[in-house]
Image (cartoon, rainbow, N blue to C red; front, side, top):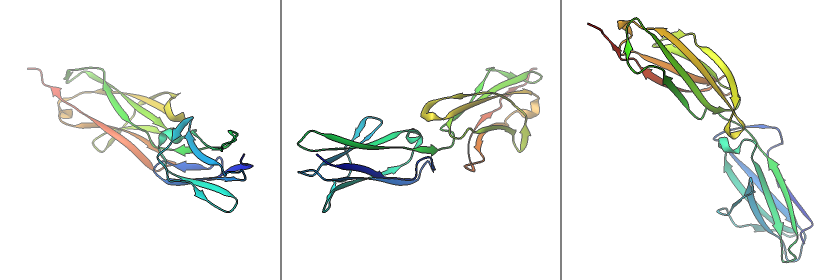
Length: 201
């Protein structure tokens, strides 16, 4: 069987940025015949990758990964097998930082009338690290109330914020924007809610 298997990868614990491409190279030495290398992500086989490359002492197989949120805390494993049916493996766990995967505004009311209080909630999808939510009406910043963050998909964190705004007829046609911003990544994701304030005659 193969005698040794190892992976060349970014240093463990090094935060990697979503969208960048990293290279993971699996090496196997020894064995007669030489081992066959297979890559797995969280136990799922990755078959659509280049053929392995033979060398004097063994074989290697390179994996190019464009990082995405699902790669955060994912384990990439390389198995080396040969006809002796013995399996050796090596694995690496990635730490990936990514901005919020989504931002959604939910309105508590359907019909908006001047004089009433508009209640909105902004929900940020998973991000790593945690994003900060901010509200604005045009170029004016508004103060919302942040709710406790929650652990969610991809090993990230989801945050929510509520906003209460007394409506006037001047608000008609304006947009309220919610942004989930990561100061560490210098990147934000936003969405808006258009105000349709009904006038009562």
